[in-house]
Image (cartoon, rainbow, N blue to C red):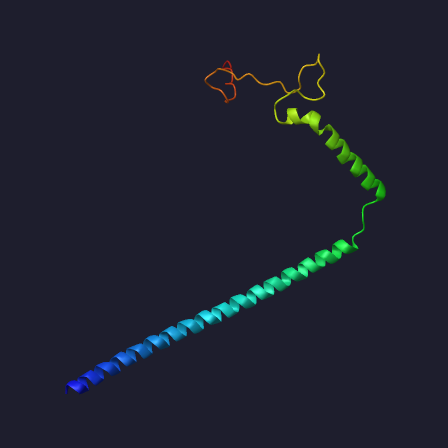
Length: 132
């Protein structure tokens, strides 16, 4: 009798293990199916991006260069900007006067003296009007 009961216990344990294995296999299959779908979506997305990049590259190859006079003006402009940058640097950093201000001129951006009123930052109050 003991052997029969032990045999039945072993068979029940085996059935439980088989059920767990089947459940685990189904979960793995679901996961694999989901991964396949995600891979396919990523592949399509990447293919679309590659096509877009190829179209942009082709468009850039076909596009004509700007007119030589425009290129010359553009080059002169940037050279002028680079030349005048040291003169403007202190002003742009807030450390010096405007570069075009002369010795006798009023600075263009004079520093504001903060007011000491307690309503600082608020608009002035309207003046009372007499009743009609």
